[in-house]
Amino acid sequence: MRILAVDPGEKRLGLAISDPTQTIANPLEVLSHVSRQIDAATIAKLAEEYGAEKIIVGQALDEDGQPSPQGRRAARLAAALRTQTTMPVILWDESGSTQEARAARLALSASKKKRQRAIKNHLDELAATFILQTYLDAQRDASERKNLARD
Image 1 (cartoon, rainbow, N blue to C red):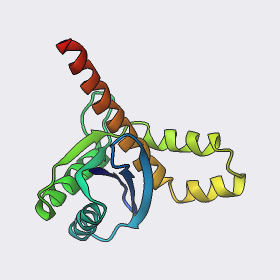
Image 2 (image 1 turned 30 degrees about the vertical axis):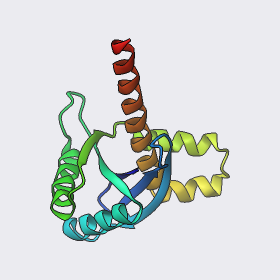
Image 3 (image 1 turned 60 degrees about the vertical axis):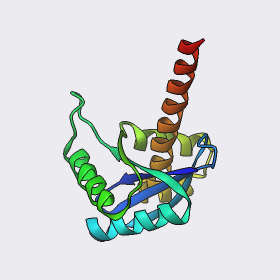
Image 4 (image 1 turned 120 degrees about the vertical axis):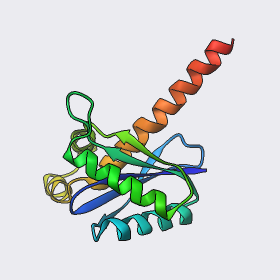
């Protein structure tokens, strides 16, 4: 089963989807923000279409680990998603996701013109991919630690 991730923004929402083994995150698409309820319904529908078993919503935290204003907005989106689907909706720390997306774009040696267009689009789908990949890696690491503890 797959996992869908959302990088919620004020104007756009970046989406990423995992592979069926929940190992690799891939960019999916960018949605234009309409309203919280419509966005939630669209995301829930896409999650079902792609066979996702859960939805991860990136949440910005401040230096004290508390939700920032953007993080509180993400929590409201997560709450709206929970009214649209029965699958689990999990808030996940998105700290550094946009910076990592920019670095990934540079590492891919994209041309300056492409990088500027990506920055203009706020790198939403790459930020969602980063959020999802950190979640997948954390789950795998926790599973490996659990297996080691049993041995």
